[in-house]
Length: 252
Ligand code: UDP
Image 1 (spheres, rainbow, N blue to C red):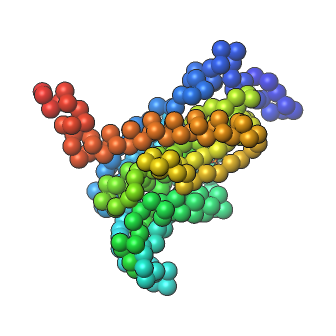
Image 2 (image 1 turned 120 degrees about the horizontal axis):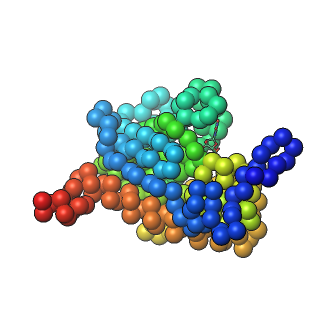
């Protein structure tokens, strides 16, 4: 541990290039995705990613409320990202703050660009993301969960939307930051990508990176998104065609 004033700053990268949890720079945290855990929603998914636990539920296409938001030529996509009061170490004040509003907006815009919204005029597709336990990267976990939930609801989309945060820690570019890395690192860059085309539909940045670091980070993020995409597809296969997801089970 180093220290600045009274604050303890953990060493984020050791001499062997390992991170505080032993991961390499290009390694994801453990990710598990369950499609369809909720009975009441049209579609749902639960994601456990490192210490993050995130539930997503989708309703729609359905009637728009309030009515004046209705669009004659397409569906609107509404998203509510919410962090439970008990999701973090220091109890979070319940309700929508500026951060949740911003995250809800960028996630809704990301999905609006991949859902075939023209097919459902005058309707709303509603995405609810509830963060039950948070440890950095919750907006990305929310996008992954919501994307699988949208597919579970049968909403037609160009593709699933894998998402991950890349960052800079101890001067190096790293995949999938956990909380200490997010808090004490030099930069955090959440992204979401359409796997088919490589198009980025969500890209934010906090902190500083130079041009070369940014392109390295994007490259690392793309490879992370490709791995996450495979897990998203596997979760949907497990729900809709469990025998093909696990051939040994089918043989048993
Ligand atoms: N966090 C917190 N309280 C808050 C907001 C965030 O403790 O009110 C923590 C939480 O662990 C979160 C992390 O800080 O995952 C990083 O937050 P950020 O705003 O970067 O969003 P995220 O990385 O979760 O998408």
